[in-house]
Length: 109
Picture (cartoon, rainbow, N blue to C red):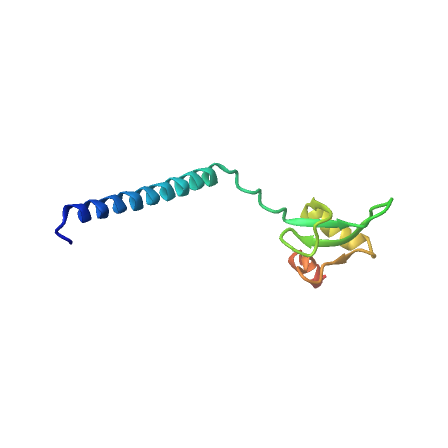
């Protein structure tokens, strides 16, 4: 440390300013964490998803597991309704990516 009082006072002031900058950053991080903690978590995805065609009829076209990323259009469904759609509607296909027919055990029947 330099022996001159003026130099020591300059260093002290620099440290005060640096500490004030750190305090501002700490306050910003705490505020961001508090806001993040107050946000509601996203609801879990549905277990099954039925994708409907576009047009007047909007008939089912494809079925997916709930976490499949291949579609954003459609409606949540139950396992029973997906099973019925796959067994009764010949034009409906199971998604080749998420394979809901495998998860439902329809490939064995």
